[in-house]
Length: 470
Image (cartoon, rainbow, N blue to C red; front, side, top):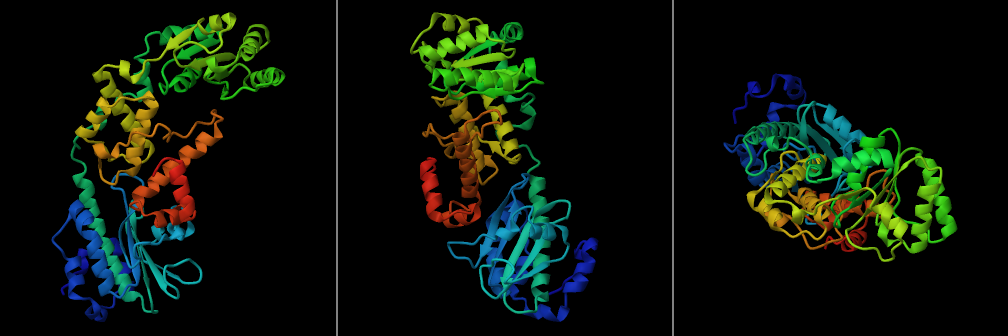
């Protein structure tokens, strides 16, 4: 085999001087040589050949087990690209969690880092581990990890370094290829965010905001999942941004406690805003107390009522007149034109993939058409959850129709914001997001998912059933 030092970046010369002893290259099998100097390149090499190539390299080099972890192309998340020696159950190296001490050491070093057993949890007992960053210090693509027996690691360091150089080269070619326009939604289409665009579809919104400044009361009515609380928070930011906002999800049944709660809530927000969802579900006594408190107390803040369209279970004339004093009616997805709905989908998709660091994702034409034709019982909430779920589970660069899961109306992936006091909903939404992310990273292998999530396999299965994921 002919090897030229000039083929390696000049900045890495000193690393090779330390780790390479040319007399050791006779250990390298012919199959490993062919791997390092293959004509394959780019994204196809990484996706189609890297797993099998890694297995051959590990077997030829006497490695007990090892893994290649790479970045999700243009995103900021990492996944296992290839593994060797773990069996179906796999293994999760908790000490390599992002931001950990070992992670920072590896990402800051140009040469391999060696760890010995006893300090960290390895797959094999009485072995050593070599770790090597892939890519530059300022732009790491991932890392290589191998477990081996014996004290002479210089040969393996050389092999890892050369293989890391190979992956860096192919990953760079893959990133260059991704610069071509993707089929589906293009970033240039997203000139405004989804909320700005949706507000343009509400006919009396501007007039309602102006009246809210003067009269301090507003009713937001619309179908289930149409974004009533989201609009309420935006209106608050327009009218009273410097003051707090509080969303009240439940009312005390006891009238005396309700009166005290209203006073306490009013004192907490001052000149801010109180948001009362599902206001028509209140009984007559609760409505009477709420109406009297707003009309006759020294409360200086603002009140926003939200509910679905329709009639109340129990009607109090004074309270109904308060609701109709300054109403805003939000449209459902079924009332939007196909052109408007298409634009709304594009904006939602762009924002959600940005929030999950999946910027390179695109939405296939078939997937977008499916979203346009679907009937949404929970309107924007169901649409957003369908898109977000697909983003979390998609392993490629383009979301396909089959990845847009519907049918579970309880699937809520949006974590409530700080002013939303629904703790159970927040916990369930966060758990769903983390489990879906683990499903993508570990290809739905529940044992590996459980290890990464820090829970038992039984607990994972229970949570997945409880959250509607299986």
